[in-house]
Length: 391
Image 1 (cartoon, rainbow, N blue to C red):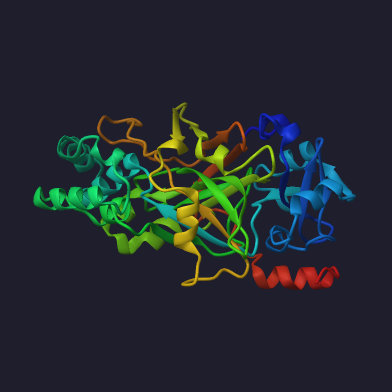
Image 2: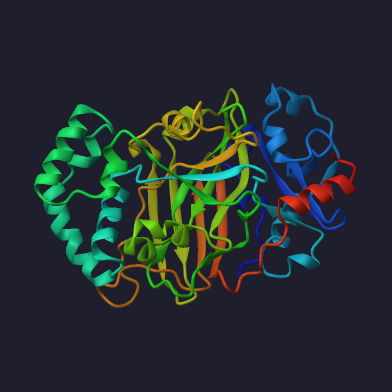
C-alpha cells in the first residue's frame, strides 16, 4: 500500500474556495469528532456539534463556519498517512467516513448504461460467460433508445409495452424508466468507511465491481446541503441470481466507502455543479492490472432533487438525515485475464474515485470476512460523547 499521500492528492482542485467538513478519529478521546478543513489543517467542530448529523442541521451553517474560531487538531497530511493500512489503532488520528448517525441510502438503475447491465445480470443469473452473449443480444433489441427516455413519461410507457412484446422486459427496466426510482438501504448508520480504509467483497463472489458515485448529504429537514464521493461496492453475481439477494450483494462489512469530505454547498458550489460532474475511476491491482472509467452525472436519468423527493417526504422521514448514493453509469465489461470473463476485483486492488470538485476517494479491496470487524456503532458513539461531556 502506498503510504506517502499529501493533502493535494485528495482535495478538490479549487480547494481554496471549498468548504469541507468530515470526521476524524481521536485516539486520546477514543472516539470521533466532526472537523473542518482549512488551509492544510483539520479543526475540531465538536463544541459546535458533536455529530455530523447535528452539524448538517445547523441553520446558516456556511456562515457559521466562516466566522468560527476553532481548535486545530492536526495537519491533514498527518491524518492521511495514518488512515492507510490495518494498524490504525496505533495512530493518534485517522480519517473516517464523513457520515455518522445518518441513514445510508442508495439509488440504483439511474443511468441507461447501468440499467442495461442490470438486465444482463438478471438474465445471466450471475454467469459471466452467459452475460457476454446476452449483452450483444439485448443491445441489438434495445439499442440507444433507453438513454433518451424520461422515466415515468408517456414515451417510457410506450417503450415498456414494446419491450414486453419483444420479451425483454425486466424489473430493472421498471425502476429505470418507470415512475418510481429504486431506493434501498445500503448499510447501517455508522458502518460506512472513509478515505484510506479497506472495502469489502465476499470471498464467495466471483463477479463484482466498484461503483463510483456522488453521495448527497441531506439533513433532517430534507435539504441537500452538500456532496461527497462514494463507492457502492456491488457483488454482481449474487444480485444477478435474484433481486431478493440485494442485501447480500450490497450490505457487507466495509462495502460502503464515502469521502474524503463533504463539500458544503455555497455561492461557489451548488447542485448545478454536481449535475455536470464527471467521476473518474481507476483500479490498480497487485497483478499489474489497470482499469479506468468515467461516470458522467450529465447522463443521469433522474435529477438529484427528484431522487431525494422519492426518498424522503410525507411518506418517510429521516430525523437524523441521510446520505444518498445517486447511482452510476459505470459497469465494467473489460476482461481481467481470460477472454469473456469480464472484470472482477481481487484482494489488494487500489480503487480511486475522483472528481475535480470533490477530491479523491482512495480505498483498498479485501475480503469482507478478513477486514477488521465493525464494532463502534451508535451505542458506542453515544457513550463516548457522554463521557466527553459533548451531549
